[in-house]
Figure 1 (tube, rainbow, N blue to C red):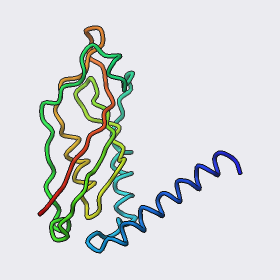
Figure 2 (spheres, rainbow, N blue to C red; figure 1 turned 30 degrees about the horizontal axis):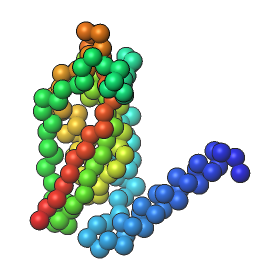
Figure 3 (tube, one colour; figure 1 turned 90 degrees about the vertical axis):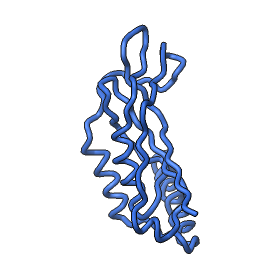
Figure 4 (cartoon, helix red, strand yellow; figure 1 turned 135 degrees about the vertical axis):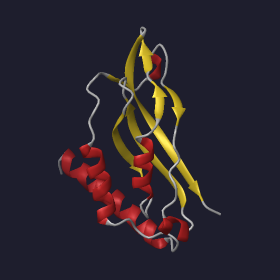
Length: 148
């Protein structure tokens, strides 16, 4: 078995386990294929940040400063199901002031992942700096949901 085949098998097993775990929780419905297609489509249509992108904050003179991080509202379906959980994204905060290269690391059903992506695009920030110049930085952004 080649390394590529093994990696594909591991990914398929991971997603099968994730879907099974969602199905075993009665208050959560498994995400639909269309949900995942929308997320992938949303991230492919955006522009990417061509500049060098820094991940290690130690390389920077000053880290990015978040001025505002809009919180998405619940979808009606998420509210009806008292959705709890988190959405985790990897984003690039470009030196131009735009949020790009959004990748979903952990998502939620009922349209909440899409809501988070829209909110993340509206994050306002002061770009990171390296040697006095604005640079782009990749960050992990988390949104938590806990309806009582």
